[in-house]
Length: 295
Image 1 (cartoon, rainbow, N blue to C red):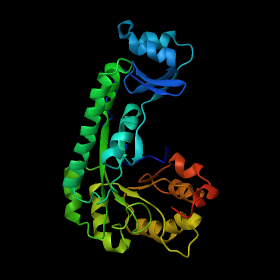
Image 2: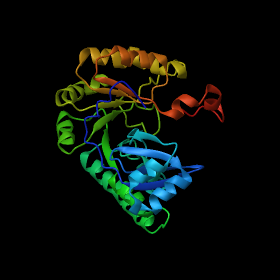
Image 3: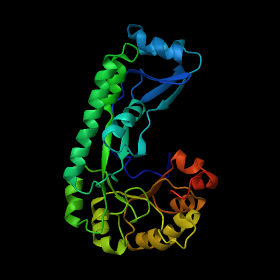
Image 4: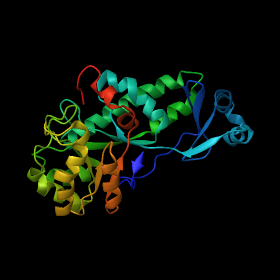
């Protein structure tokens, strides 16, 4: 979900497989017929659409009494990690989404263009293997394999205190979608993050000049600030002063959780947007403190 226009939305749209099915409990989600759209059908209807392609995918829609057709979605904030974890989770994303912004906070973090290229190749390798498995499954058939292979990972780089202006230009030339700013110590694998945004002022100015978006994990790490106030304090202490100095910087506030962040994005020009992730708005304070504080 997005709040405001996403600065990465200009990237080319991905193709959509004409027939693919993914079992999801009592429903099956199928990409049928119309490029750029997905239909949500009953399991029987979706199975019929995949099992009888000779009838034409349009026929599946015309025969279905209740069909919801939506634009094929993109995932603007995705962690697929690496190794076995990537192999376990990535095919689920690729079966539904056309593109995704891939977060770079691996261990070690993805800070260099060559690392991003290698990471992207590992993603491709996992999807190629998953597509081969899908082709061997008589229920999923060719459409599911095509959907996996059509998925487009949009790579990001991890911003550090030492990221240079020349690295920004190199990243842009290599097709990197954005940089990600993690305040040092704020979240998972953020130890190499930015300790003070003043140290990367020239780098951020170069990003603004080149039109490179900055994805931001927006929270202060001051232990004196209540954890539920850290996003608001980040806006007041860090983000707003930064954008006053560099107004042309394209910023996406990631996984916002407060009305303060929504209001801030709405008050800004079109160069500022935000992502909203379900897990960050559904978990209550009680859930957060079960088993101790683990932000």
